[in-house]
Length: 268
Image (cartoon, rainbow, N blue to C red; front, side, top):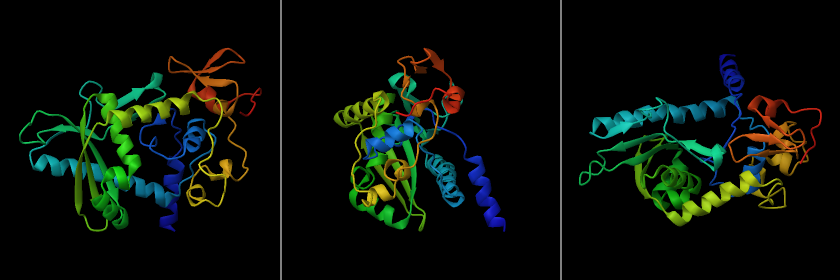
């Protein structure tokens, strides 16, 4: 009885809609999924248990920071100017993300050198893969996230700091900016944001294993009607000043406008 109520609470609290394309998702293989998400075609309806699991990863961040402080690393989890998380953004604000932290006193030979910190928790199988193959091979989406953070912030080195949730074993890997990878990712973000039509599927077969596990499956393969809002309407588009515009009404759209849609909605 209590467990179900707890799960339900998580589901009820998870009602926020992301307005931008996130750096944490850009490493996804499927541009169509990214486009459908950016265009609000579907809701990622995670169970209460899964939402609680995501929270567990977030709660681990403070422990990571405390561990680093204990060995003399200076960690700055918040921007000193804004008082909130360090953020990066690009493409007129339609693309961006939040850094877990930045730190120095990491390299004894160059203590003033600044690093981006990214904290991740893994199950045993995922952690073992990370240890054996490194972040670029085993978890490309995490690697891409770091490349975006480094490229947009100007901090050209980062630390992937990971924990095995089953054993509490820790892993770290220094990741450096790869300009070619960063440029490729930014071109991808630009395509997703600027495209007025959905990109091709990664596989036309609905039985393809990666598609079956995708939160966009019902809309992409299953014939489900997309959500009705301004972003699924063919008359809307993101603008160069960071806003959204309805071409039919020649009107700037607030986030609330976009969510509500209107009677002149026409699906893309």
